[in-house]
Image (tube, rainbow, N blue to C red):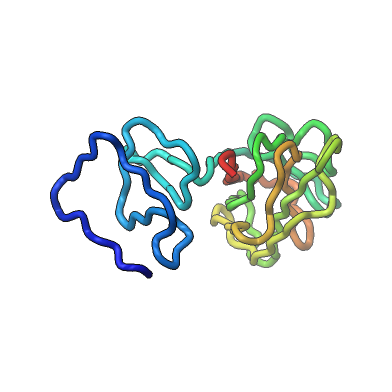
Length: 203
């Protein structure tokens, strides 16, 4: 990287502003800041890898939506139960036009956590992400991405980490999820779920 001069430890004020042009050595960026940045009057243009502002709120780089839901007594004899991101709609035994969410921005599924009132410790669980594109009235029965994990005892948390696993979607896609249990559901359990979805409105 090219030699970059240090402005010193004191506060430097430029009454007419500062224009940074070109690139910092071999890097593609015009300005590299390795510490935190405070901007009092907003930012125009693009910022890469920004996370939080001085108050701890998300600045750029995505909006995380965390939703919670529950379904009870899932029917036995079905290969998968479909559920939405949150609890406004009821789970279904097949893709449905009444229990999906519409993506307001492109994004990806980050994580799903599941607890059950019954033990699955002798079985495996598969959580799947489903989407529909274009003029689709619901999401596809074919998973976009699936993750399988070993079942745990009652009320233990099953974690399905989708980040970086290709569970992405585009703006206006309809999205939903599925859960299947090897050997079938008991039919009497209460299943709690939390979904974490990242939207990317700044891309």
